[in-house]
Length: 315
Image (cartoon, rainbow, N blue to C red; front, side, top):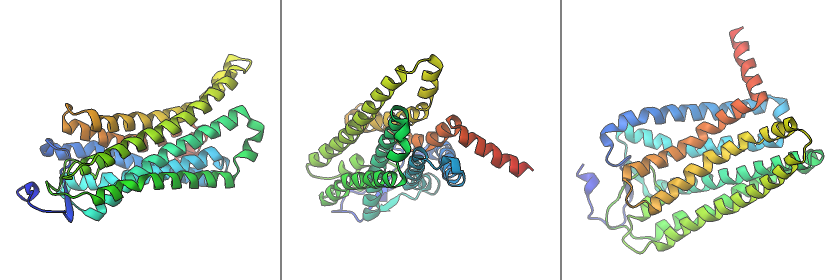
């Protein structure tokens, strides 16, 4: 442990990830639910990709966006959880400075991509409910691809300042990161200089992305609700609104843990550090686990295709 406590160095070539500070003795037990959730996330999201690829009736804009979400969830969880498990199981705590910055960039860019994809899915629901006759002509494969490209570019550009700002700060206190991955705030707090620019940019990025995306999602659903209330019968209104339930659950699964985790790390000074790190871990696992479950349970085509696959295996 003496290597992990050293403080006499200039800029480190490697960082040391502590895992969950204060709960090191329980790392093996904590790894069990996280490993199970990671396995569910990988299996569930690959199942979504497989079913959409093989089921012709699912070759629609909504399911193309769902595939984008599944790929983003897979990469997001793969960028943090394997390293977390290697810390828990093998005490593999070291991470190079470059790998740390790369991980940080991917986490922030992928988080923005997930939010952007949910906006695209809200737009799909808006067109499908408010202007169904023009749905196929409005959301063509070309338009879907352009929307996906715009989401990737926006998120990638907004995430660029994180590693660039972190690289320019001097680190002379310690190289021990009190986290299981290179979280932006946890890393810049190690710098021996004024890091307000990094902190302000992180808060701006959070409020800008969630604020802008939340605004567009809210506008879409205001129009959707107006269209639903114009329907003549209660059954028709419930059936139409039911097509939005999966998307609303996906929004909650992403935004609630994201906002809570980000704000707690910035302003929860009296909250125990191990609790903050555990919340961050939950944020990284909840959306990848819940998204395939939500759409698998709520989507008739998915249920039918899964039943068909298992039936064929039994025969």
